[in-house]
Length: 238
Image (cartoon, rainbow, N blue to C red; front, side, top):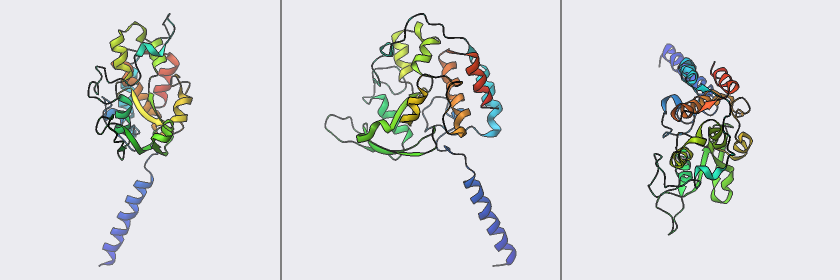
């Protein structure tokens, strides 16, 4: 092998290694800009070259302060994880929570008990968590380690337009894969029903991706956001 060819090969290996090493944390999954229906895996960072596109989308979200005069009640959004819904995964015999776990943990294994639908109830797996950037082992014995987040919280949605929806539309919202993301349990508890200006995940690499996903939800369902939340959404995509 010539000296020149050896140098070229070494340079290529170094370049590839540097590219892999520089990948942003939380890169597993699909960017929300390429996953407009939420049916693909996870929440990958938005590429720098696509930040202008992200801001164009976010600017379409309408500003409005919390306007509901009726108190929020979780039951207004139906039975949690019901399959009886017009959402994309509805009426197939498997609860929504299990389907989100399947989408976001590709290495899952299933529980096989007589009462379970086949290939439905996730028994174990590993989540590449977008909120913390960590790998989280999941099993039914410690199921709360991985929780399902409504990226625009039900309470927030209620205060920004969902209070006037029909019960069927609220059921659909609560079970729509676009709205749902499997994440680290403690991070989800800290997020609670906060908007973007009050909470962002520890993993900065997905801040813009989360803002884009929230914008997709808010545009789809004609929800408003506070002025400060919209400002924050644009800032993290700048």
